[in-house]
Image (cartoon, rainbow, N blue to C red; front, top):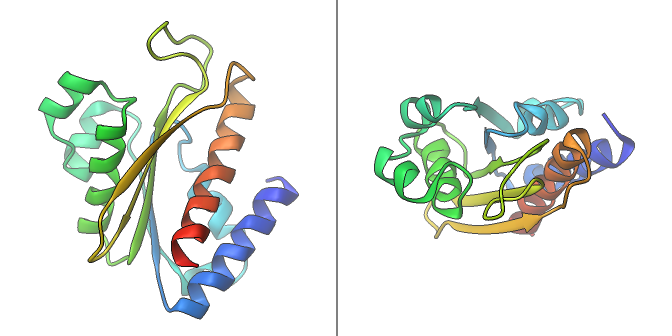
Length: 161
């Protein structure tokens, strides 16, 4: 765990605690690293409800309710899937806020979905869900995953403030 991730997670903990909010994660390409970053900080149980690691399409469908039609039409690495993942994490948890990530950490990718592309979903109970795509580039698998964790923590912090 990098110092930057630990600092962001501590900032998230403080912001969520002050706002009285709880958080859930839905992770594909990070395989639980966002949840791990949050729970690295003492006191995380005050704000962290649960994390869903849904690496396969089958897991996305079964655990988060991502529709087979959405996967077929857009592919797993898409804003549409990230939105359904984030919404599904809220439905399947008691959290107030959920972040979802799905991407291509590498190596590999394609012309249409290059290595380093990650789609993020953010959903808030009683609010509108939103999604965004970040192209981190072909910086290597570990670096893409670390950048994804940092960005996801930043999205959660921004949604609370």
